[in-house]
Figure: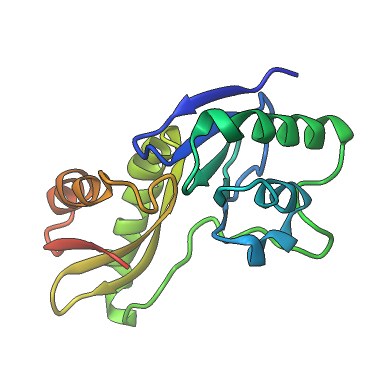
Length: 188
């Protein structure tokens, strides 16, 4: 088994591509060892000193670190991923449901049409591009009074130094272009 790695815009996160499906149709963001019980692979990864986050995408895994150099933990991460997939064990612990593919957060019933447009653009134009960088962006809520969309940054996007620029220069401009009701995009 050959596992490719890719840098992400976040220097504290690497993207691992095992060459097979990881979590088809869903994503799962585990932000600490307390969340790790949801996945045997995540439990093993969080035992590696310096691993601070694990994100499972369709065909990739992103691992975030804190306080260590990649060259010290990357071999252990590669070994854990390889051993997990060659063992044939399931990714998720029994009885664990993956995260929702797209949460449909808070908004008023009269705003359903605008929210559907926002989610459509997120799903078709933004989330696939962000997945290429090892992350995900989830709809949180819509505030029609201010025209503000609130989004959750996940995976390599969470804590990324360029995430504010991505929100403002990329996502906000795109949503404002297609949906006149949108005036701003903020991290939730």
